[in-house]
Length: 122
Image (tube, rainbow, N blue to C red; front, side, top):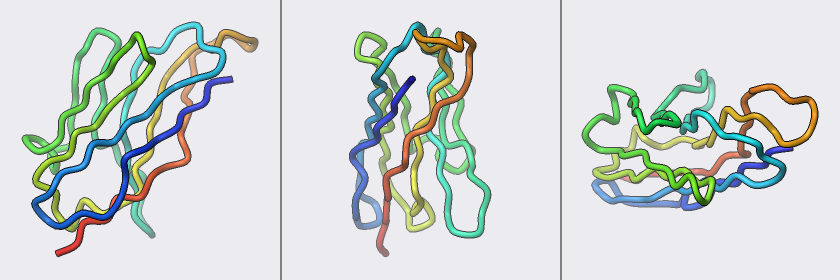
C-alpha cells in the first residue's frame, strides 16, 4: 500500500525554524489531500495544515502566519515550514495523505506516517 515517512523533526529553541518533509512511496494511483497533524499526550490529534490536490490550503488558527504547507506532486512529497516556533508547538507531528492505492482495494482512504517529534524549548 502507501507508505508515508516523515523527517525533519528535532529540538529547536523558541523563535527558531524547522522544515518537516513527508515522502509517500509504495503503490500509488493518485494522492488527493495531504496534511500535517500533531498530537500531545492526553490530547486529541489535531489538524495543523492541509493542502489539496489543487493547491488549496487550510491552517489551524494557532499556526497561521507562522507555518506554510506546500507539496511537490512530482515527488509525492509534502512539506511543512515552521517559523517562529513556540513551546506550545511541541508535539509529535504526523503526515497524512488521502490516496487511492495502485493495488486493490481501490478506493480513496487515509494513510498515516509514524510521526516525528518536534520539541521547542523556552
